[in-house]
Length: 497
Image: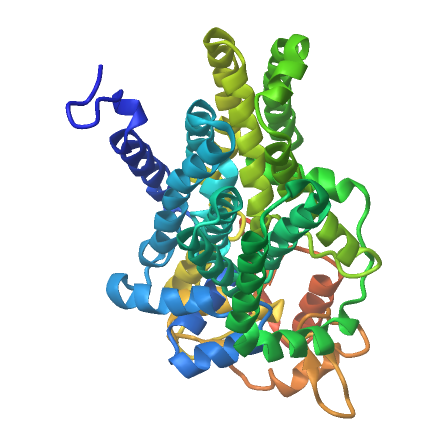
């Protein structure tokens, strides 16, 4: 039962972890091209295929830092811009999170909990979902996990190797997504809350201060872009705010992802996971004190802080403002949730732990099945493009509403037809349009300046609503309506003179 090289069981060696990581990659790579490219992915392709200078400029104008698109630019030059080529980067990064989660949990709670957490991350619908999209979610999860691991190792040992790892991974997380700052704030709040009890030596505190200076200096080149974004975009983001139910929804999403849409799906998932949680609590209740004493207080404090602080910061920022609860980028919360699960499974007898596993698999099965076989039907831009190319003519025009959905359709059309995103609100004085606000009866007639020729028009619209009906009626008054088809959540209609 032991390997001749290490003298340890195979599952307690790098070989077992390597096999689990390969299995995690297979789960993330399976049916990877099933879903068509969607809006944010199309923007990633457009930015990553441009020059280095354009990537930096585009990122400075966008709401995300540039690291992911810079890495993706190099990746697609080797593996191409197909769905597989684009998303395989996220699949690799997502698989690498498994050994990171293992070593993080091992440093916090021991080897047995680490294996349970690594298996949970491997099977997690949330982390699989992050790894199946050409966006920065899986990269942020990886660097956030590395930041937490290196911080904790430095907190325990104070070694400069761990300090350097913390600085580099923290900067990488912050340059990947601004939610990387949530990790930065969480570890600092942990330090602040325990500063009277940590009793760290003076040399440790001096090194810690130097680490913060290195992080601030490393992010300084991008600070003007962040400031400009907050200064110009922040006041304009006034919205309806959030409700107190949003944190609960965030925890649900980081547990099982967002691929459960129907009430039946959610009921099945919550029932299975609720039974699993009830079983674990029933087994742990008689020995809660022993479970608490199994880890030092700072370990528990660190786990709880990293799990709750990001939710609290996002909730505070979103209050009376636009809701920025984007669960795709709360991966540090999802990771710590699985660390807690690993600790719980490690503290109950093996028989009870393996009784909980089938319930966990049932809870994960529905969102995984939707992710692999159902999730792609709602916004199937590949099918829309195929229909336009089969039934359209080269001289036809394609009108897309909302305008930003022009990007995923353009990815498949490849300039074979003329695309025109329908702009939103229109200022008749300046002539400016704002694509992120809907068309209304007062400005719909400005479409006349765009569609005034005798060419046929294919009208492509996402979802249905008052704005969509307004656009349909405007085209129906000027063109002769033709065949109409619904492809998932996308409406496609032909209008001829």
